[in-house]
Image 1 (tube, rainbow, N blue to C red):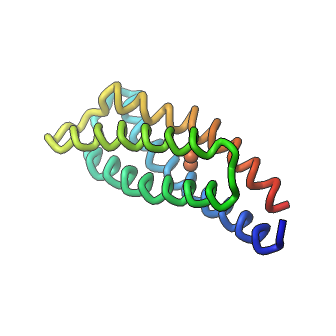
Image 2: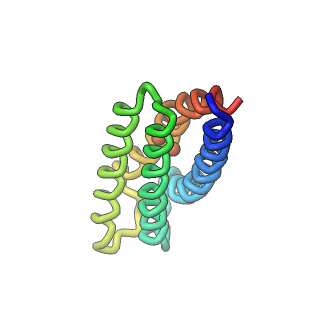
Image 3: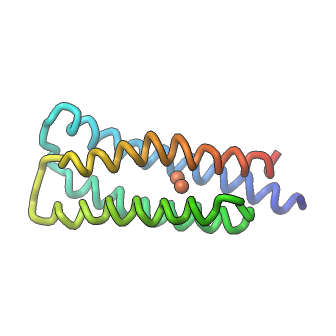
Length: 133
Ligand SMILES: [Fe+2]
Ligand SMILES: [Fe+2]
């Protein structure tokens, strides 16, 4: 592995980790309200910010996986597509002005945090980490 790839893999890891922190920050606000069955006044703005961030984040991760020839690339990219469609679908539904987090939205957000970021992304980052070491 050339040192260029090592550098790129290291930078990619940092970028993904920073994006995850930002995603988790938005998720925490929304899920806190869902857990307490409390309305969130700026729910629409929060979910819009999340959808915009996921759009960028998934494209970045996809590009990094292609660059690193990640072995589970196809499966991971398909999961990004599904998660984006589900959360964006819930965002479109919020346009009618709901302030309450629907159980379905909460379910997708928990899946994103607990399964995707803590599972598929963790595995991918471990792979990249092997390249940058
Ligand atoms: Fe991610
Ligand atoms: Fe991912």
